[in-house]
Image (cartoon, rainbow, N blue to C red; front, side, top):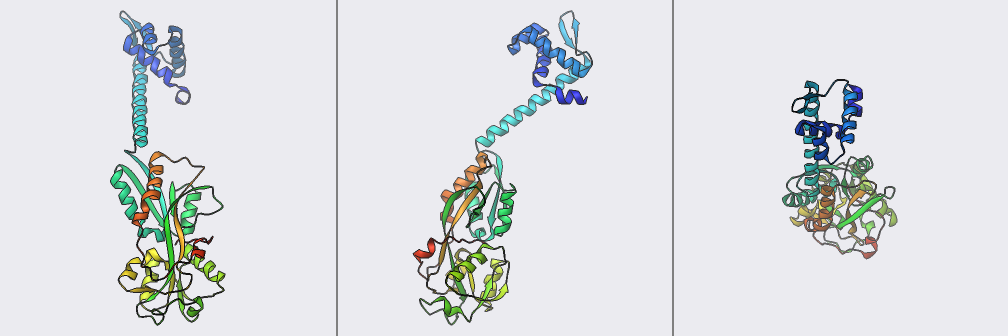
Length: 325
């Protein structure tokens, strides 16, 4: 039956089902809008694939053999599956169902869940799969087509991506409450030459942004500890283990409640932008495109508010380096 499975067509199955319903080749032709020879040709081809009689003549017309009834039952199952698939496609087009795989760099976890919650309230039937990782991990998944869309602060230049802007992403240097430099204003970066810096792991966008920003100013930080989590870095800074160059969105709460302070360094904060990105060579289904547009249009209102303890430098805003964990 391998030849049957590989060669049978929907036209052949429809012709046999129409004969069962009408009791004749003439009736089947009329029902399907075909000629009688066309129906006869389809039945002959189908019967050749099966290798057994599908029809027999009776006093009141053509009736199906036992094998013929089995083949028509197959037609009904296929027709039902096609109908279900068409309904599913219509549902996806209408955004009443479907799924989206989205990835976000770990720094974005401070606003992305809230933005997705807003989207889910508007489209409750769409299933969202969210992956969080550092920049290298998220971009690798995007390259491997494991993600429909991603949120990043630094779209790579070696991928052909559609980029939708979300909003500003400030980065600053934080210290524990009561730090000796907390009250000083408009310090040069060199004022931190004796400070110990707690930094993210290699592969982190925040780490790369810090390195590039500091190198542009000829400053080499004293790195005391490498930590692969923004949360752990915050706790380590509050414990007095050092200072950290970090996303303002990760420390907004701690700055507002005074557990951390943003040091007033000339040229800081470094302001980058958040983006929603997706591959141009991947046609997004309506649910993924709807989520991408929602995140671009609405996520700005979910971004954490960062206490403005320093003034932004317009020169830094245009920098070509970016950041995300």
